[in-house]
Picture 1: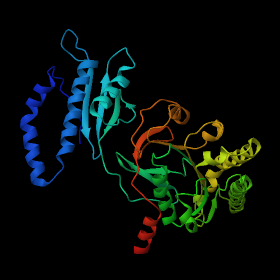
Picture 2 (picture 1 turned 90 degrees about the vertical axis):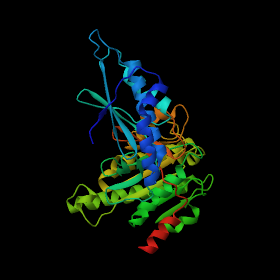
Picture 3 (picture 1 turned 180 degrees about the vertical axis):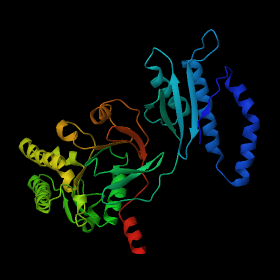
Picture 4 (picture 1 turned 120 degrees about the vertical axis):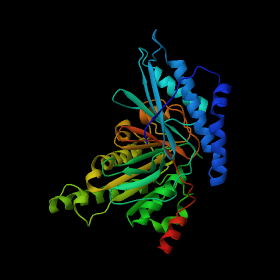
Length: 373
């Protein structure tokens, strides 16, 4: 579908909607007859109007009435893609334009990417996330983006750091991710910092450790056991003459999930914390080739609890909901708008994406699917 140009009428909102009224009426009738949602059309119409108004704010005409701004849009299943070029000496106009669209439409906007002199960003429409999950030896679904199911390529971008305050959707996210991993019978280890959401599912994990206050040595032993298993696989791969687990059909990925690491690390004496972080650091540096992945969840990623050098080796980073003011800067190195509960900014490699999490209330849903397939 080609992009459609936004026409920059210098008119009031009321007059613009009057001009659109024949199309609005026809669309309303069509939606009623076809039993299609009319609210989506109204929201898209509002986005088009706000794009028109923003063009009037940030665009200028020369003496020959030529505009220095070019704006067009294209509809996608879950978003409106905007294509924009502003010939301006003010480099902030692109960001201001996008910020106005987000402010006046009430929709989240994605990050810019630039190609052939144009800036592209998505205005994300409300949508229901896909509850199905996908998982194989290199990829794992972690939610739904505007383009569809969002896949984490953990072979290329190993290890995930998931951050979110209480009630922002971490448990729902982990139910979804764990369901996908267990559906493939992958080996999953769990250190459970809270013993609330996953305790009743402990038999589903290959190794499960519920954290008991001040029993730090057990946590360190579990992390060290995972690290030793990783080392053993690397030695075996060297004997096989391969340098990546995907080169052998007999080698599957293995996952260590540390749930609510902040709860554990906050109680640890300094030396114990350093010992644990040293082991985690080795896993995130050397685990990729062996297929040994670490997924850590926590409320905030302070350097006191997870050092910057370790944090940088988590190649997928996720921040759920509306976090503290410093969380985006610590995770992504920039400021971002907070999101509603169940939505997250996700960075895989260098690209930021907004992802919505499906409502999962437990691993029981995976068990049910398993029994019926």
